[in-house]
Image (cartoon, rainbow, N blue to C red):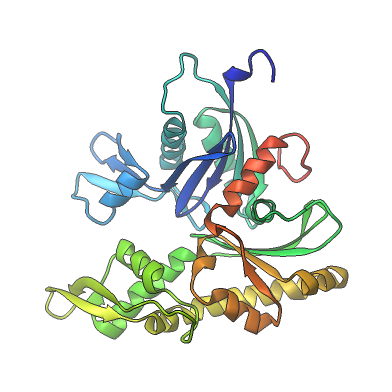
Amino acid sequence: MGLFSFLTKEIAIDLGTANTIIIHNDKVVVNEPSIVAIDRATQKIIAVGRQAMMMHGKTHENIKTIRPLRDGVIADFQAAEFMIRELIKMSSPKKPLFPPSLRMVIGIPSGITEVEERAVRDSAEQAGAKEVRLIHEPMAAAIGIGLDVLEPFGNMVVDIGGGTSEIAVIALGGIVCNKSIRIAGDVFNADIEEYMRKQHNILVGERTSEKIKIEVGAAMTEIDNPPPDLAVHGRDMLTGIPKEIMISYSEIAHALDKSISKIEAAVLNALEMTPPELSADIFRTGIYLAGGGSLLRGLDKRISLKTKLQVQVAEDPLLAVARGTGIALKNFDKFPFLIK
């Protein structure tokens, strides 16, 4: 640590479609939904994160809520910059006398284009970063799970986030083959909304469909320890009157079946592209699941039945990418896979 090290603040950011997590000094200092609320007239930020999420779907015409990231990439550049800046402010409760210069490592999807990569970098720089390095999310997830990614040994990681599902085979500090598909938590929510509309003639919003997914979401119609049925409230499409219906986990398994099949197909596709020596390693170690989507009941079992491989969910999968990004931050100039 140099004499002026207090003037440099190092933070690792998992910039997710659903949640943004910031790590500073090995601690999670911010874990907030990736959403901002803006006053339409003045274009001023009213709320960020959890407060903005409480407004989502409930605003009047003067307020709009924006999710700056879609499918794992920045869709609204200005809102993303606002959000990153406000979340960085949240990470240090005391206002410093001299604003420190920021060194950042940010997790990005592996299927990102150069233009989208530039947008992430520019947003970070506009939010005050002096030095920015990027790391691909499946690589960060592998490090966060605790795998030794620099060894000449193959590991397969499936990171199911809010906007994208990242499937990668990692060896020797690099991604050997990867598949990135834009089917993840947001698509699951949309599937649930559509199912409720078609099967029960009831309209539910994004927040309600997210709650249904968390409370009774499942990947298979038969699972161990099934959750109890959930009372869901929404608007009756025929009468327009609010009503309540009971939903079981097996109904949600039917609703999500098509999207989960696409994730399974992407996993099989990635396995087909894997060099034979690494396939032999994966047969021994199995597949590691990370990201919020891996918490879906029975998903590990379903992928295991499809691939005939053992599948294990990472410990605390929601934080796997953020933890790996934090470890990469400590080795800012050493890791070969940090994109300058």
